[in-house]
Image (cartoon, rainbow, N blue to C red; front, side, top):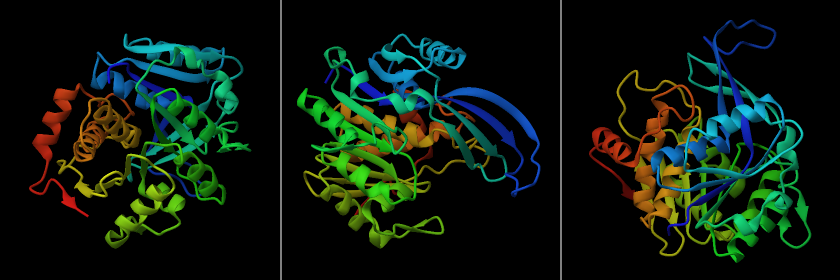
Length: 339
């Protein structure tokens, strides 16, 4: 593999507001700080670009023609290895208002989809997509991508099938949502997915099997959930990441692994924005460089830890060699277990 990675989907500007604590309904919260960052697939794009400056990262998305779109293009333009030729410009750019609570390190999102809802296969110039991996995200966030398709189930599934037909490995991510449509939309896409990397809340919604209780992973259900997701058609790996661990299944060999989170010192975590995207960047880079699923989970864990070191989603990411140093510095005595 040496062509690069396509990241396609919802490219968003995040406006962050830092508050002491998220208020109860009808109450006041004082904003202590505010700033703008790239969001959506932008986190993953920049993480990959920083992880390896020689890796070509192609972008496929729709942005508006106004100042928000220009800001996103300027941020991406700071990295020579990011190719923005596949971005269409029309309408209004997607934007998310993000409220970061200092006491819990949790985020609340208010999302305006804008041009993101116009993204579809019509926006993809397949002739210019010369890559090894096609990453589509986020399922459940794009109106046309999530729409039904008579031949494939959903439009997302159609896009993934075409990427596979053109010789690319496919990978998906999704947003956390509790609704009746989750199973239909995501399961349709998994039929044409090689690599599925999602969090524990998303995994249990798609699988229809409880995986966590009050924030704690139910260990006896790790393997059943992984197996259920694989049964929907995932060809290579299913990986689920949570705050204290990740666990995955190699669909080809049937081997499963769990990797604990790094033992980070007190005060290390500045924010959780983009940690899931950072984890995914590690998995994709491991796929791109021909590593094993266990290597991918370790690298994803280290990348997520780098992200936690800064408030926004991408400032904490480092070159691959430094990410590995982070892993070796903070890993515990047990690096993994077979499940």
